[in-house]
Image (cartoon, rainbow, N blue to C red; front, side, top):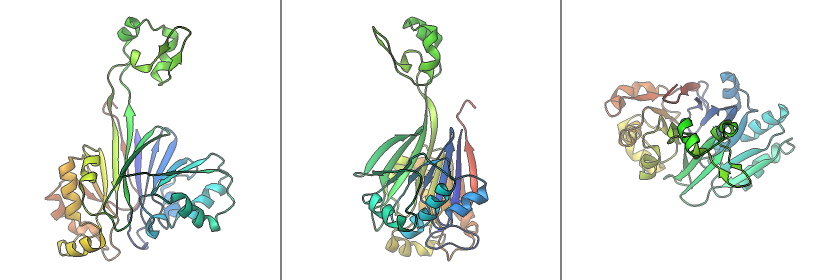
Length: 303
């Protein structure tokens, strides 16, 4: 099971009822955070989750409403006596940007490891997550992220016997371990059937519609996408500032054939995004105007 929580849904500035952009996932005891706008640590506390299990933080880009909450989050994690390393992923210059922000969070009891995204797409495998960063279309370098949980095939005892795999190795191979013996190497696919369908979440903000988004969101269990403007007459403004309207996000969700669309990153001038929901549902009926704290438990098909 993969837990997904949209901690903040605001764009540009926080409001009393809406924190800035952040999304967190939990899987197998490890948390992954995407973006860390102002108020993220408060939103996390409101949710009742601890910052300590956060092993990876991914940043879409370096605008303040997506990264300004990081110093406080790091101090929060340090005050909780975290000692495990933290991995931070982001566009070119991520280390320099974070180290500049750390002027007010210099002493931390844990190491920060930086991974800089190179090129238009890059994939990382960390803590059970398969994370793919892909370039989107904003006025500075910006990436969307697809987070996937892969699932191995079912154990096949007949296959194990046919490959002459002794029973003492079955459990280890099912856990993904590769076992080296004196005379041969045992691999998990020697006892497992074909891979089963995993879980997939795609997240993007601050962008115009582009092919990279629909390609990477294809068949996602959950597509979280910016909807800066609900009004159709704000289309020209969206184009000017490299953002999206609700309708444009819904068109991409329809094209990518996702299971559900959550809109986020609302303009502060839009107090009630749900006002525009009925019209958007005419384009893609599985659309939700998400609010801070919205959570879903994504489960594997057999669960």
